[in-house]
Length: 434
Image (cartoon, rainbow, N blue to C red; front, side, top):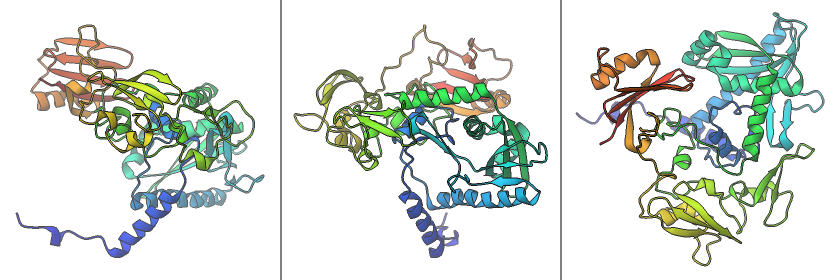
């Protein structure tokens, strides 16, 4: 086949420069210093902890930054439309003249409401939290079919947090289809138990000094595939600890101070006896930085002393020390820039996974020893078994197991595993490796 490059439409220089401008503007925005209400409904505790500890690299294209801005620009139109039908709308806090803000847990948890309104036609006398969103056609169709809680659990959690902190008992979710401009509105009722669950979760994540458990035991799980933290969470072997940089928030000495009054989020440092680490210092950290052991996936912390932590590799039992780089120790800079003590060694997670008769069916197919060959909806799994593995409805599984979270069916001895993840309404087929 000949070279098709001349026939492929090329991005103009004007478009390239506009995208580059958006990327420069977006990248210049400082990282959030708090756990946000907009993400507290995320399904993975570990991802939220990584985000709060500034472990996740923000790497959006200029086009994506522009897309985010498109959603922000739509808010003014939503406000004008609500006012146009007779609602009283406040998009800023009258006391501050700025966007409504909720703060909790010593300022380490925060969120910014789109506004509040009264005069909503379905309940004119009730004040509502306002949440505005734009969707593509596929997302909008799912929203209409399933409602906010099922189709957009993070948006639902966001509104629950705002209602809980403002005392309002209802929220109005107003969404637009970006492809057709069709609108969707849903009123959300406050649930005190759900609010408490979300805030307890936020506190647990903020207080944690080590990463919480992974949401799954497999790195190729569909929930991990597009996660921004997957390399750090699972390890790649190319970089010992793939962090975007050295900050106080990944240091053993730093603690978020939750039990305090005031809106300013404070961090204390045990190494320098400082109760209020300045934000500029947090972003660079000092030479005393000792990485949180839970961020090292290929070794276990086995000893520690003044200014050092001793680790033992899971793969070969090699012992090494992390410190400031002197005395033969590996510094944080070295761990996040290259392979460090992992260089040239076989990658292995901790603890090592093996196949045992005592393990559940799912645990008998860890990511090191199997591969996903299909994932989709449970109702499509029968067809997938037939097309991907030539297993028809007449073939019975050799083993099966069911819990509250999943149902698993094995075909052959460590050959093929079909799993239905009940809570997620999702299914996958795994093939064991030789």
